[in-house]
Image (cartoon, rainbow, N blue to C red; front, side, top):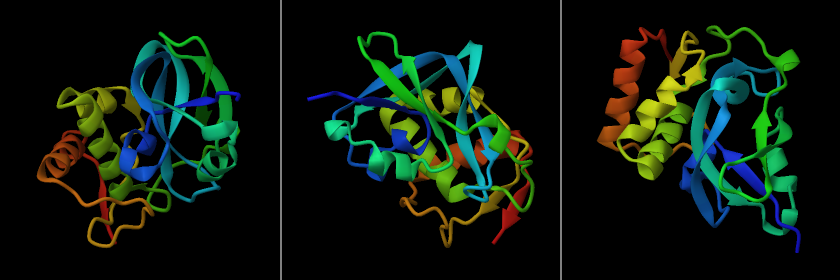
Length: 183
């Protein structure tokens, strides 16, 4: 059997959004996250961007039977790149939106708050109380507006919120002076 692995750095860190097992926590040097808009999604989503001065946390998981079809569909609009995760003896895929597909973010291309909530819930669960802070610090593009869709989530994998997740996200957005759009 051929083994294939991916590095999840956004919603894939939240185990409630997928069935890939087993997973292990990892830190990937040479990358950071960035919020970008893309014509494939119409909203701002996270992408991985090469940055030798940065390292991002995430989860490494195996793709069962090396059957990439379902994950590639989930990651429509992203290209798959091989990278090496420290401590691994195998290549690991990381998904990144091709830079030529980036569109300016703005009110017509916001970050979904329900998506950000899912991401932060994953980081809090996997990496503890320091996880969300490291996520925020290693992600750029916080000038993108945020659509508050918590009451009627538009993100298809939205999860129920806990108070710690809500507080972490709300405090960070307030510190960034993010523009919050209401549905």
